[in-house]
Amino acid sequence: MPVRIPDSHSTAGAAYTYIVRAASCVFGAALEPIMSFTQPPASAHLSPPGVSLPKVTMPALAEMKRQGKPISALTAYDYPTARLADEAGIDLILVGDSLAMVVLGHENTLAVTVDEMLHHTRAVHRAVRRALVVADMPFGSYHGAIAEALSSAVRFVKEAGAEAVKIEGPRVELVRALVEAEIPVVGHLGLTPQSVHRMGGYRVQARTAEAARRLRADALALAQAGAGAIVLEGVPREAAAEITAALPIPTIGIGAGPGCDGQILVFHDLVNLTFAPPAKFVRRYADAAALFRSAIERYREDVEHRAFPSDAESYHLPARQAMGAAAPDADFDSDNAVVNRDAFEDWTN
Image 1 (tube, one colour):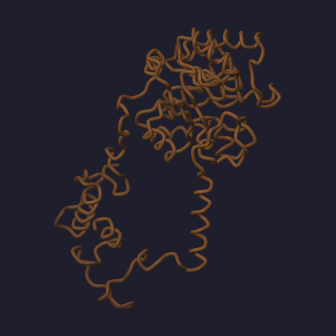
Image 2 (cartoon, one colour; image 1 turned 180 degrees about the vertical axis):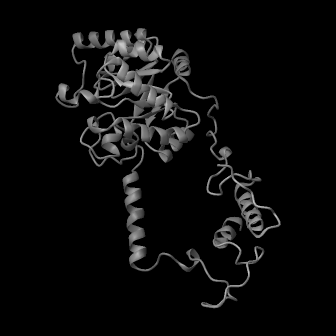
Image 3 (cartoon, helix red, strand yellow; image 1 turned 90 degrees about the horizontal axis):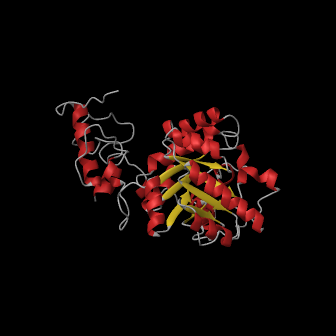
């Protein structure tokens, strides 16, 4: 629906002009007429210093492997965390089915649905400018006929903005079909969480020479089928390093040692928001749980002691207008012009 800009000589037009001018003071540039004041300009989302602007693509990951440049990857499930990861220079952002556990509170990854994954992938896609956005295909979405799996994968690309999908296991024919349909694929081998019941829990895989050989053969088969990268999870570092050296495509490790072409962690593990002991391979870089808990407790205490909100955090009637008195005629050059003028004054001071 087109937005009608009020005439500058009308009452509404005067108000509109005031808002635009105030907003321009905040953002440092004139605003386009159709911009919502609550939405910052696109230029506000900038790449971090030292990070190249070109979009990360699947071929770009292959070039990073060729050049020996490590690939950074991280999960994200919503706009704020995806934006932070992107602005920090993360190369690949995975909307993982770990969403089921770390966001939705399920016991494992099996319960999350296609619709839930689509919902969160959309949010991540809106936040990202540079990183490659990969969406996990959840359990049950690709375990039947290839045509059904292809239909689900198309939804992730078409409806949610995913730039690649990730599937678990050595599903060579499915990978080939997806690639033929122009959908980039990231494989996932080793400890595959959707196979938790078959594996009898989250156990390290490929611990024998024969199992390591099978893992290497599966990885090569996925690469030959067209997969653009492979996640190796929960395997001995020696096996992961050998597979990495043998593959023409990048490997992304999680619990697979330092020999992979890149590394990925779950965002909530990284910042201690999982409420559970970390796996051996997790390094916690911050304690967000302690930070959030402290902030929430301080807020509760301030409310209980009537220390929040303060007078400075409150709106006021104009000094010349007493409570119950008739409101003066609207004058958009006066202090009564905009309900949240106090906020404008705070921003422009």
